[in-house]
Length: 500
Image (cartoon, rainbow, N blue to C red; front, side, top):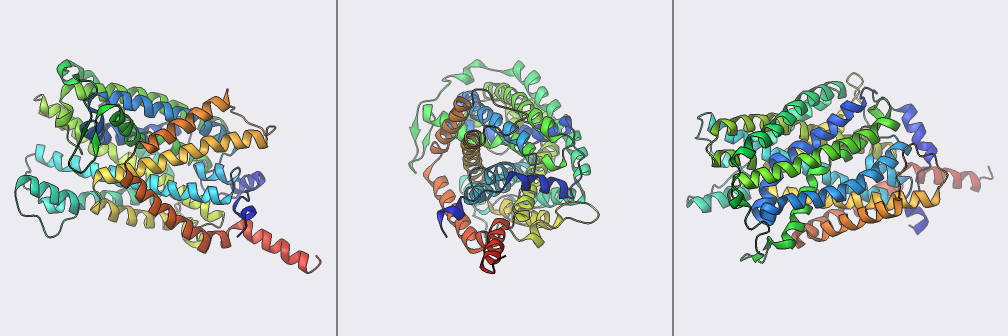
């Protein structure tokens, strides 16, 4: 295959045809879209990642990590908003890249978005399981078999730590089952999903405000000392803390901000996507970044960062100061609230699958099949649910978190570059929303995201490499041959050969 075919771009006129022929219902207003963004952002970071990032890498300086991650997201969000106003279609960064960077780049981004959303949902499902088990404990149910609520790696670590026999078999059953509950909701329809999400988001915002208002009364400033712990290297050679640890934590918590990316995948179901998508993207990001900073300062002030639980950090912080009643309330809110995070992530992934299948890059009968009654891509939703359920049952939370973050960072970096390319190649294109000082904004976005990518460890990069090689193989074996653009080229060549 020559370079020209790899760089062939989907005509912008084709996107208009996709919009006109879409079978999806336009039911989402700007506040529902904003709620989708907030629903994906609040929960994944506050209830999940604060434990891993503070305990293992940043300490009290986790607040700085959220500032760095928020800045990287803000620059990328402006670029997303411009693209979303030009191309109000589902598919997010994949769709935007196909019209600007070319087919191979679009496929590569789409492949990494699978990593972002599927592993993101997996991370949240594992954390949901932790909070669910904690809820059982707080309710007086203590005899939960460890082999039934932990992946094999975590079960082994906990057994060795407790000095008991390592179980021969272990599976995180709650994590697997909750994915199927969310899958059922998504198959039923976007309207029902949006209503469910709005209710849960309201609960989560109330829970976050509760954490800050109540938690600030129990802050011990001594827990913030030193604010940036001294750099240490463990027996395995992994580095913790210091300035580089703050950067690593920023790369990890980047996963928490993908909610605004999820907003852009709902364009074909938005009532007024040209105006409402940019509004929802910026609003959800700004609101949630502020909340993240406040919560991270509160949690690391309430409890020593080394004592925060990796899976249920918010509840553990309240338990550490004797507020078991508050821990119970937070745990209930997390058990309910994390469902909406999974809902948004799996919802977004199926819409990207749908867009890629419509372009011929994935099998259309499987990934573009819309249910005649529910009007949802039900086959791909069930398939994604099955895979995510299995992965959640056997994957440690830290591994899933890092894989999500590196896939997200890569997609954000590419979209910052893509918006610059489009501005240069098609300067007269109508842009309802136009980023000011684009070279500076996109350049900073590209730089920030690449910096955070390189802050992640070698094992995460190795997994990304393996995933990328698999994606490239799928592209050349199937997608390149079956893409709509390739079929058009073949038809045109046939007509030329016959003198038509």
